[in-house]
Length: 166
Image 1 (cartoon, rainbow, N blue to C red):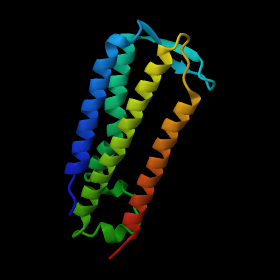
Image 2: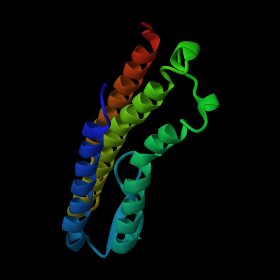
Image 3: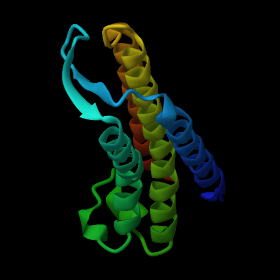
Image 4: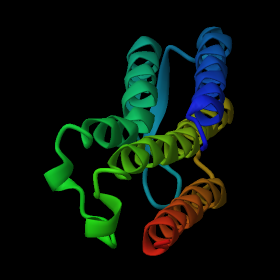
């Protein structure tokens, strides 16, 4: 039986990396930096550096842990879980295995989400390092594309797991 140790350790390591990135970049941030960009990468919104760092901390803590929190809470509200072959998987002998799998699997999504947040942070820093702040559309598409492909693979592997009955 697999444990949550590996994804939890990787997520913890990624959080250390994320916090290290914020600490490393904070003295390098301008007093006001562009944080919102239009479809062409032109700056349309600005924030003070301390407000930006506070919002990145909140975003970096909340966004990656949203699905793992829901997955963990699902063990207390099993009626809210809609999975393939529900009767098979929610038999008393497998119920614990289902919730362990959901939580472990959601930690992997949390890892991907945190990598996305780190990428957003570095793309914002890079955009502001230019003379005129400009966000690379290609970079944003690559970040979003990797996250979406990863999420699709994550979702398909979950469906594949629950579609398999012994």
